[in-house]
Length: 139
Image (cartoon, rainbow, N blue to C red; front, side, top):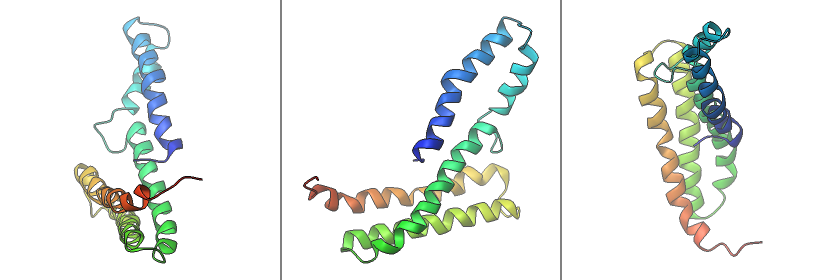
């Protein structure tokens, strides 16, 4: 669940850069050393890799949007209010995760657990919005 722009960056890296880097390393091309260094930067098993950072950037953009969208939703139906509460909670919690990482309260190995726990609130948004989408008649 990422914004379309940040969701496309890791996909592009996965289908374009990684195969080319792997090919350069395997074939021993003149760029093999550079490709190996760049491939190490894309390691998804560490929370500070370039690839993982783009994923968390997407979740952060969702958190900013969630905070902005939650206010107007409180004026709607019960379904919209549930969406507003879940979105606002997600936006605040994800920013608290970021602060926790920056002040080193959350250890590196737990970043994904905390981030995905906060993101699980987005499922509530989808489920709460279903009645609204069910009655939608289109433009």
